[in-house]
View (cartoon, rainbow, N blue to C red):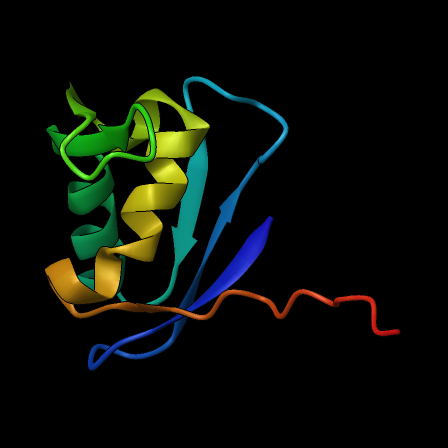
Length: 98
């Protein structure tokens, strides 16, 4: 999957195979600062709060690197702007209309 990226360091792209769950293999293209920031972010161990039920207080905390699994990887991408100021430009999903 090819996902465009945007930052103050210039635009770029991250490519990964969304058919392989673990470990996630990815490639970042763009400026050296963009590549370094994204690669460091995706290889750093962090906490992921995973819901166990619909209750607000029912969750587990997994300490993982985003590359440890596709779910963690995509969660980290979705939080990347808040964490390192790099915007992920997800493709629009087409929905059926009645």
